[in-house]
Amino acid sequence: MSEEETTTGTKDQSAVVDLTLVERLQLFREREGAVVGLTAVIVALFPWLFARAPFISDFLQGYQSLATLILIWGIFAIGFDLLLGYTGLLSFGHAAFWGGAAYAAGVIAKNVSGDPLVMVLSGTLFAVLLAWVLGFLSLRRGGIYFSILTLAFAQMFYFMAASPLAFLTGGENGLTGVDVGSLFGMIHLEADLPSVLGTLLGTGLYAFVGVFFVGAVALAYRILNSPYGMVFRAIRENEQRAEFVGLNVWRYKLMAFIISGAFAGIAGSLFTIHGSYVPLQSLFWTESGDIVVMTVLGGAGSMFGPVLGVAVYLYIENIVSTVQALTIPFTSIVLINDFGYYWHLLLGIVFVAVVWFVPDGLWGILGRIRDFVTARIGGDN
Image 1 (cartoon, helix red, strand yellow):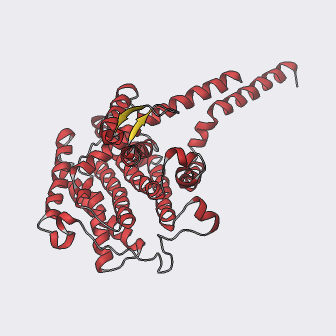
Image 2 (cartoon, rainbow, N blue to C red):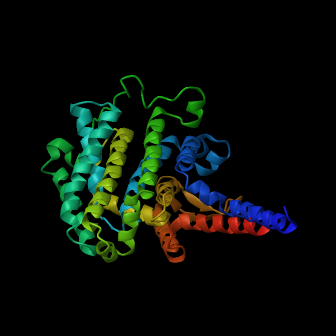
Image 3 (cartoon, helix red, strand yellow):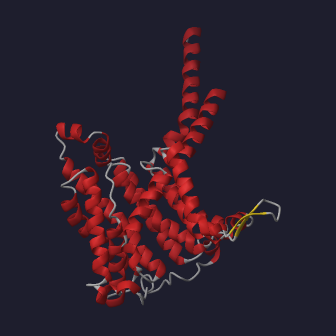
């Protein structure tokens, strides 16, 4: 081999090494197994870090039930983002699927079977059928008219649950007395798991919800990296152009709506299992508003951004809202009394700041940090 060929080969190898260092993270993110596996690891470690780890949990003030609730709302947010972030459809009526599935699971538990899997399957099936009907009616209109139609349908179900169907839903008191049975008739979800599993995961309920969360991530990842996902993005970018190339845009939008409703149905059913109770509030328009805020706050159009938005929102609502007084660190000087009372104001400030300065959400901040570190690594090599 000549000296010139040797030099060229060395440069090519160096370029490959540099390319690997710079794009290693990107390659990792493109591997479905790696993403799902890392998600499973994070889900397994999360409740321990949040609720039981020395120093960290003391600082965060987290608890087991909230960790479970974050995963449940996280499933809801992932499904909603498939509609908003990837297809470009803003629904103000997703409370119909969340609350409707919660009620369906509760009614099934009270009258048929309290097996958690039966509850999830029945609630999800109800949400899918409801999403098909509402999507068929709402998607005949676009833009703000679609959003208002979904809101109107959801409020219609809220008022139906409050009065005409009170004999079934419990009316303003919500559906009480939901008896969640054992999984497969053997595993009590409220019991702590044995040994190391109990230290990491805590209860069987968290493990049960965690399996569905990891499954939701895997399903969403598969959809977004399939031809369906490409069509969803095409519709979001330019609906007319998608029609011009021969795509049945209405059919794909309906499918996106149904898939999003299915995710909401899974989450709503798990919400009933988590609380053994279905509040009437679960059908109210504020629930739809909450999931919009969570998704935009975390970063619409990203796989894990909405989940981050859920975590921040629920943390402020459940932890920060309990703070009695805001003091200067390491001193007893009180800055604000009854600080937790103003948690809505704090959330609003955070939301406005994120939307104003980082339109792609909290996940966008992490993306910028990642890009900066990657660029520095690439520059050093």
